[in-house]
Image (cartoon, rainbow, N blue to C red; front, side, top):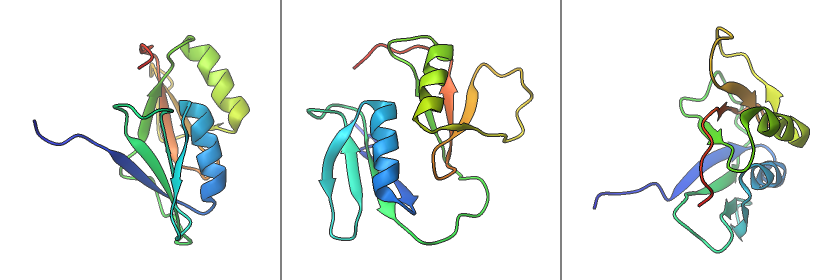
Length: 124
């Protein structure tokens, strides 16, 4: 076996706010905090999915991130999940899409773009 992704690290001006947002989006729970203010969230009880580490940073963000997160609903269709994500604080984002895409481009409360895909996944 080679490697597998164990953590994704995202710089955050407000790690608590982003941890709360992404925990709701992904159904994650807080699994740890570091002395530097980083918050790690992950699936309840562990599991194969990577955890997400929200790391405090005051560096200004410039431009689009070179990496973004794609999410897929597990228990509802794409439109119902879009409504849920918007209610949690996501906002539509324009990254030059044509309007004919099968996904929705959104931004989290700190402006980090992510996509809601049409494909529905089985819960893990």
